[in-house]
Each structure stands twice: as structure tokens, then as C-alpha cells.
Amino acid sequence: MGKPDEKQLKQVFGAIDGDKSGKINTSELSKALKQVGMEMDDDTIKGMLDLIDTDSDGQMNFKEFMTFINVCENAEPENVGSILFYAADTDFSGKIDKKELKVILEKLGVKATDAQLSEVMAEVADKTGEITHDGFKALVEALSE
Ligand SMILES: [Ca+2]
Ligand SMILES: [Ca+2]
Image 1 (cartoon, rainbow, N blue to C red):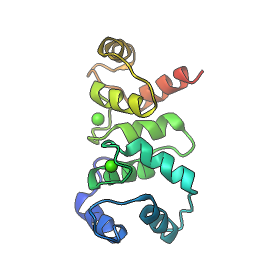
Image 2 (image 1 turned 90 degrees about the horizontal axis):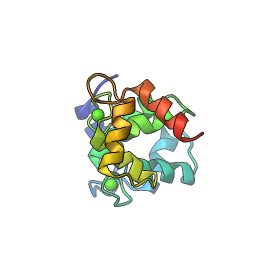
Image 3 (image 1 turned 60 degrees about the vertical axis):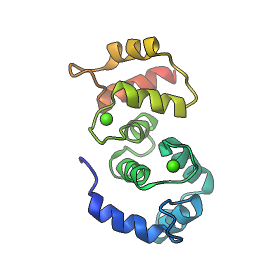
Image 4 (image 1 turned 180 degrees about the vertical axis):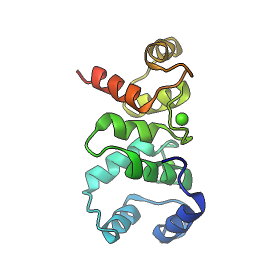
């Protein structure tokens, strides 16, 4: 666990970014995943991209790519809460702060006010004022009930 190896990932990113645009689009990603034996259908890839696409340009820049790898390496497969947790933890701190919570909720189509966010944080955050993996999973489970 921890922060992805930036140097190594830069090389991988460059290899996937076929047209050297500095961004990976869905077809480049789908091709790359096939090469490593991970078949994902286009809808899954698009859904995944939407989740980590913090600047909402429909493509993956290097920072977003690191988040994507973080999800692939650490998230529990099939566990939505776990996947969302790693997608939200864009500074790779291993916890979700209020700002990260706001971004991921917006990705899910939930517009929360600052007061509402503070309320959620007060309820689920740990002593350090951030949400742990388990805390976040519990939150997602509670929300999807
Ligand atoms: Ca993007
Ligand atoms: Ca974080």
C-alpha cells in the first residue's frame, strides 16, 4: 500500500499514451488492459474513468492515472465502497478528507452543502478528522440501503 511508484508509472503511462497527448483516452486504456489480460467492457472502463476523472475532460491525465492504479491495486473487487474510497483518495494519504469527500460525492451526482459535508465528517471521520477505509465502506453501505 501507499503512494504508487511515480517513476515506474510514468513509463507505463507513456507506453499506454499511444499518441503522446499526455492523456489516456478510453480506447488507449482498453487496449492496454487487454495486453495485461484484463478484459473490461467499454461501459466498465467508462464508468471507472468517470469516477477518477477529476478535471472531467473524459481522458486520464497522469495524476488521474495514478488514482486509477491505486484503485486497481488496493480496492477490494466488487466492493463499491472500497472502490470509491480509493478513487476518492486522490492524494494517496490512505484516508478521505472533506475535500475528497465532496469531489467523489459530486461524481456520484450528490451535491452536498458545506454544512452537510461537515455533518457527515463529524459522524464518520476518525480522531484525525478524516475517513478511514472501513469508515467509508460503512458510509457507502448506509447510503445504499
Ligand atoms: Ca481527466
Ligand atoms: Ca486523502
